[in-house]
Image (cartoon, rainbow, N blue to C red; front, top):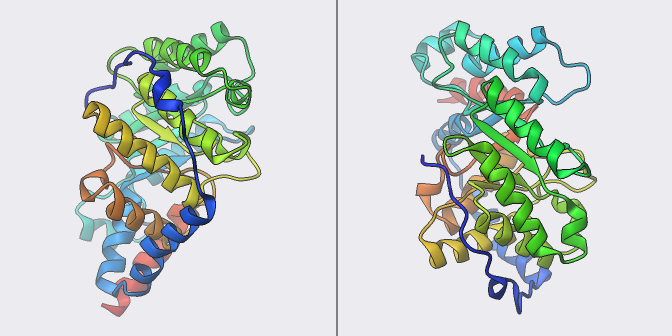
Length: 310
């Protein structure tokens, strides 16, 4: 997938935006509830494996070391503890990426290289003053350049929420464009909106549009550190922005829910909503990801349970 490029800032796309939250919640229920209840075991197995392949396996702890990043990479490459399961999958099932702090990118690169997976599993790095984004712009740009230099293939930036809360959309656009440029034309950029700190659903929609105009390849719900993280209603608001941007430009922008997606059932609800709104073509790693640290545990549990029933 070719990295996105910025388009000129268009303030018209931020005017007259309204979000009816009760209607959004009802739409989510209509899109997902009935379909989830009708999922068969065969479909559940397919969803389980797809959720695995769409996951950015993440560690963002203060006590991360080279050894636990190496373990994370091994689990990303070989997600099942049962060797028979690996043989059944013929080594083709692995996570989309691993996601770490910039200082741990080199560790991830070494580990994936040793596993022969460095060209198959992406290395994502959070950056730009994660999780707050409240640092001088130049230091945030330096952080991006450092992570890219260490081998990151994807950068998960975090936006400055104060710009959202005060309506400084042009300034937000300019900052993200600078971050897009710091990534270069080969590294993908995911813009974390931190939706729990954006104030309103209208702000979430506007921040989504600005991030896409500024060249983001993905818009991402959360850092996972806010009080409110990935919820289906906020996901639908972001999807509506992605649909509008696609109609305007013909560009397909990805979505990454992060924080709170812990079970296969959670993941299925998101995948159904994506399929029913954006379409099946979005359900691939180039356009949809889960940011998760614990989801893989439930994936493995469900894989074994469902396999026994089939």
